[in-house]
Amino acid sequence: MNISFSGDTRDLFKFDLVRHIMKSFPGLASFTFIPMLTDREEPAKQKKSKRADLKKAVKTGKAGSQNRELMEQMGRLQEIEDESGYFSGIRSYFRGENILVDILHRDRFSHEHRVNYFKPVFDKFPERSLIFLDPDTGLEVKNPTQRHLLFDELKKIAETMDSRSILMIYQHFPRETREGYVRQRCSQIAGVTGISPVSITDNEIVFFLLAKSPKLREQLQDKVAAYADTYPALRSCG
Image 1 (cartoon, rainbow, N blue to C red):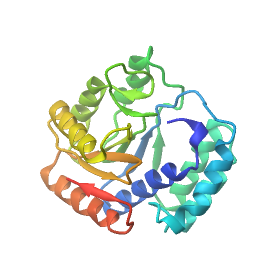
Image 2: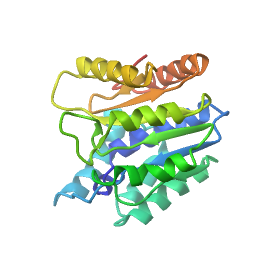
Image 3: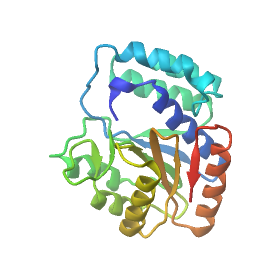
Image 4: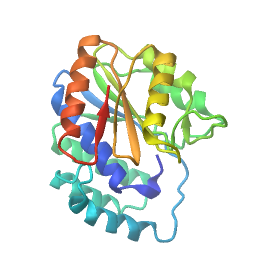
C-alpha cells in the first residue's frame, strides 16, 4: 500500500469488504493487516481528487458507500499525513466494530529486504484470522518491484495458513481485458497454492480470497457473492 492514497475509494472498498467478511465468519478471531508499505508518492492534486471521489461514491454506487461510519472515517484518513495516524485510524474503526486488528510490520517494504520483512510474520503466524496482504500494485509480474507480492511469498503464506483462516490479496488492474486478467490471475494463484481463489472486483481493483477448507471456501464464495449483490458495480467469481 501507499499512504498517499489513504482514505480513497479503494480503501473504502477494501475495508468494507474486510468488515463484511469478519462479520460473516464469527469463527475468525482477528483481522491481520500486512500493509507492505511503500514510499509516499503523492501527486499535487491527489488529496483534492480523493475528497471529490469520496463525495461521489454514494451517487456512483461505489463499494462501501452504504457504510456511513466507514465513509466518515475515510474522510478523516484523508487528512492524516503520517503512517502512524493512518494505522491508528484503521484500528479505531475496527475497534468500533468489535473486530480485533493486528497490523503487522508497519516498516517500509522494499524489494531488497523482502525476506527480512516477512520473517516476523512467519515467526508468529496468525491463526483463525482474515489475513490481508496489501501490495501497492498486486501480484508478481515479469519484472517485479517493491510494489508486488512474489509467487514464492504467496506460496509460503498459503502453506503456513491454517485451515480456519482466510487469505485476502489486493490487486490493481493493468491496462488489459478485465475478465481475461482475473481468470489468468486465478489460474496462477491456484497453480502456486493449490487453492482456487474467490474473486471480487469493481473493474478498478480486484481482491482474491483463499480458504484451504472446502467447506469454508464454499461459505466464502456465498458471502462474497452476497456482498457483490449489494453494489451494482461489483462482480464476484469463484
